[in-house]
Length: 239
Image (cartoon, rainbow, N blue to C red; front, side):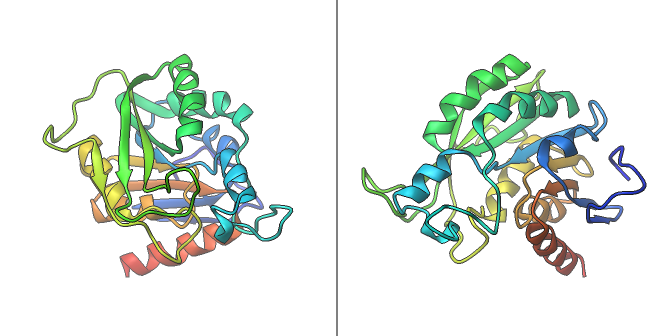
């Protein structure tokens, strides 16, 4: 077991030698992870501005009602980002990388908070989804991936551009990212058998990418539905 988890818990879990999945709130989960035990963090929080997008109908697939309740995930409020980022910094080993998916509005919130936690900000990478989505003021075709560093670690391939082109996932888990996109980040910022963490794992696209690249995965999500989907997907991959 990779985390300092109480033996008795109501939280669902799946533990193997290659991966550990937990149904847990992100910050509570990270507090159980030992200091400087993780080689790379890649994550995609359900950031607060998603509520604004839902209100104008640009992410209607995510909503359950006009009251914006959601059976898939709860929005992670902006005021919790400082604590989240300090925990991520704590669990990462020295000389490691951290990638966070977000929109342009959330990027302005995350960057100073992450720097305050101790990270060096390098740049925003662009995920080009190759086809436009919903929207009103120039329809969205891209998303930011904020690239941070703790200490100093070289990228494995200096020929990779800062615009990464992968088609968006259609009819998948809400805001799901293609595993191939995470594979690029994993190849760039980790080595075989290293430990990669995602505290907002959703349907486990980062976990799938991790196992494909012969690394170990530690993931959590507050949603039992997300945990069950992740369990099914990752077990199918290993079968």
